[in-house]
Length: 148
Image 1 (spheres, rainbow, N blue to C red):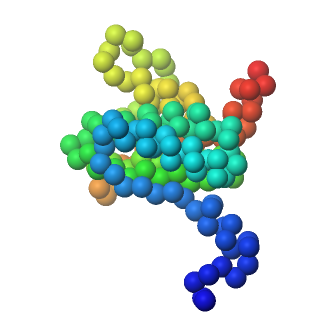
Image 2: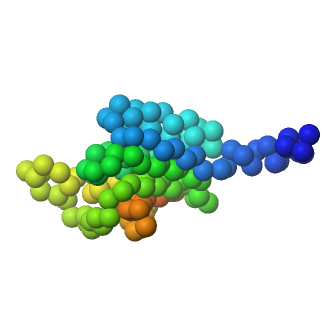
């Protein structure tokens, strides 16, 4: 059977592949995203990243509600020192990542600030159909917080 792995190492390699999901935004989908993130991280043995990564994923995906088209793609991929989350949406608007705390009396603007505070790196990349907002979370960052 040529479609079957020839040894155990090839079978394990499948677990390191990115998890890619395309869906319509709904507040109820955020719980699904948290569960998917938690399951994938546990599968990769990255239990310490579950809480922070689930939070960041929720914040990134919730920004899709501002887009005219609520379809988005969510990707979680393993990196050498943690994970990378990507959310592709149809908006071409590239907003600056806040480096200062937002005005608490404004109706929005806190999500990306909180993502930047939790993530090792965060950014936006324009695409032909919109943009990808991404964040990386390193295992070392969580270890340093736990020790302090």
